[in-house]
Structures are given as structure tokens and as C-alpha cells.
Length: 526
Image (cartoon, rainbow, N blue to C red):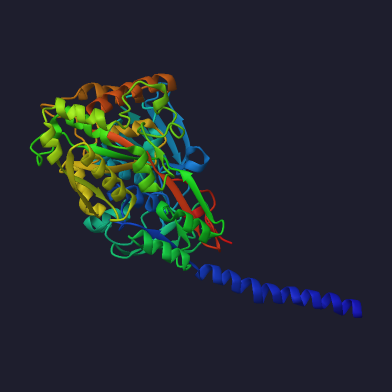
């Protein structure tokens, strides 16, 4: 009897444990909120209206999905909404079978939604560099889409990742208001429950997600523009995850994280753009000698030290060659590096016709514009460049404002100098958005003009040649020539490849650390 009672007691205790301890813990997890910092306001809830990395990295991988996804921690692109992809022998036809996914509104993903989304993107000139190769797209049946290309296009994976699929019904019914409010038009693991550009955005888990319900149910992405305020919020336990943590406070953050931190090399570039078409500085920047002098005047090592505490990597390439196989490495030669040489800069300015007296007084090259926080890394880079230019006899004002204000001006070439950034790709063809005339609204230097001083035709030809083959050696040759032409123009001057610091809270497991496109779906509570 005693043995029986002992067994019975253990069984009862087990039932009580399950009912009294486990269930409240699960309930607590469902109520818990992961708070994430965003340094700039989210400008829209429609993927088609987002162009900055900080906007795309939370919406493109968490709310919307593409035919392909991207995981930088595990080698790049993978099939996402595309279940199976068949390519014709001539590489002009892609027949794609779709996964059995649903939108967050409960509707099944249909091939017509894919056609709708791509046609919408093809009407947006900003996506020309991603869709220009598509001749037509058609629906074969509810789960099959057929892409017909104008020519073979080796980096099609980036198009399949970048173009997201939206619910045709929801986008159409919302009309012009779509993107200004919360919606359930994506197939991703989270939907937007609240949206206020001035404060942030709230996500709820979509438990009907086709790959299984997310583990973390509630996410608040809060707007904290100042790095110092973000550090305090993390140290006070108010932030559960911070991506692109400020490097100036990295040692303090890493110490406060008690091992819950990681610093990885970013798949990114910060660059100085010199606008040869500037109309606000008496056409000084139209002189190639002045532009080259500016490049030689910039001390990238100091830029890196001041902006990232030295955690970044001085850049000479457009994309990091350890991420991108076809990126021409500086070590191989083939293009001008413009290594820091202030004496060379002064010689070029004198060759351009400026006297010692003029340089001593300071020759104005206009305004150096950038975006983000006034104490952010881009602002710090701009301040170093301003000092470097002053050392060789050039002067400029520094202007820092919100990306929503600055971005339209940069893309309409309404600036003199600018610190600008690009990131998050696994194919060198990404440079197309900076050099090809199809990339209207994405580029910040316009090479193709009626009286262009540059060989823009060869630039565009090299872009086309680069995508016409999958042979790495051939592509590397084309892109080396392309980058050499760009560097000769002295209009796109690489500064640093940014580091990516990540810290997280005591009760959070962030899964794989990706330098750009993190996935909340991979997160869980400890």
C-alpha cells in the first residue's frame, strides 16, 4: 500500500507540475514582448516603398517573403516561396512551383499574386535594375508561375529575393492607402499590428505561417534615434535585441551583455559620392582633378577609427570580396585605390588652377550631406572628411538629417558631396543600381547624360556582360574593368565596410547572427 501511495503521489505531483507550472510558463511566453531598436523611422509598411537597409531588414524578411530568401550566416540565397525551380536549356525560361503558403489574412498564395507583385515592381522605376531582364511573367496554374527573360541573367537569385509577394486582393482594396497602415498582405511569419512612423511598429506572430508558428509572439520595434539613448535602454533591460549596435559604445555594450554579443563583418559599403553635376558650387566638382584631389585627401584609416572605433574594414572594393565571389579584390589590382596622399591632393588642386593663396583661404566645394543621427557613424565619417578636405585647402559644410528628408535629394542628384551606404547582396551585379541608367531613383550619380564626360555606354555594356554568364572568372574580368572606369570618374569613393555589432537580452536566443537580414522567426525565448 505504501508503495502504491508513493507512486500515486509522484503521478499527482507530475500532473500538478504540468498544470500549475508549465501552462503558466507557456502563457507567459505568449504574453512576452521582444523590444527591438530602430535608429530611423519606418517610412512605410509596403515593401515596394522601402529602399533603406534599416527599413528593408525588418520588413523584407519578417512581414513579406520572396520566391527566394537570404541567410547570410549560411551562404546566401535559398528557396522560400519557390518550392521548385526549373530552368530551360537556353536559360530564358524559369518555371516555378509555389509552396502552399498563406497570407496573414488567411488567403492562399496564388500564382496570380506573384504575377501581380512582379508587375507592380516592374512599374516602379526604382526596381529597374532588378526587373529589366524580365520579358514577361505568366500564371500557368494556381501554383505555377513562368518567367520569360530577355536574355540569360546569372544573378536572378537576387531578383527572386528582392521582389516580395503581396496579396493582390488586399493591396488592390486598400488602393493608395496601402503602405500607410497596418495590413496582413504578406506571407511572412509576422504581421504589422500597429504602425506610427514617429514611434515605431508592432508585430504579431502569424500562427498560421506556412513553415510553422513563430516562437516569439509579440515584437515592438521602437524608434530610438540617439545611440546614447539606445545604450541606456539596453543596459536598463528595456531592449531585448539591438542590431547595428553603436560601435563607439561597443566595449560598454559588450560588457553589459555578459557574453550576449557578437561583432561580425558587414556585407556593406560606406562611400563618399562626389556629384560632378552639382550646380551649387560654381561647377568646381565638374573638374576631374578636383574630384581626384578629394579622393586622395580622405584618410580612410581615421574615418574607420572615428566612425567605428576601428572595428570596420577600410574599403577599396564596392562589395566585400569574402562575401561576394565576383567582387574585384583590391589585392589583384586593376583599378585606382586613391590611397591617402594629401600632398598628391594639393598637387592636383594646383594643376586644376588653384593658387596657394586660394587654397590657404579655402576653396568651397559646397555641402557634405548625409543622413541618420547627428552622432551616428555617417555623421562622424562626414566630419572626418570635412577635416581632411580642410587640410588640403578645400572647405565644406556638413549637413545631417533624417533619411526621409535626405534620400529623395540624393536620388535626384540634388547635393554636392554625400556619405552614402549600400548593403545586403551576394552578387556584384548590385553595383548596377549605382551605375546603370535603368536604376532611376536608386543611383546617386547619374553617368548617362547628353553631355556626359564618362564612358557610360561601356559601363552599361559591362553590367550586361556581367550577367550574361555564370562563369566566375569572366564575370570577375568584366567587373574589374567596370570598377576601374568608376574609379577613374572619382565620383564613387569607397570608405569602409561597416562592422555589425549585435547585443541581446538575458531571456532571448537570436539564433544565427546575420550581418543584414535577420529573421525574427529564428528567435526564441530562453
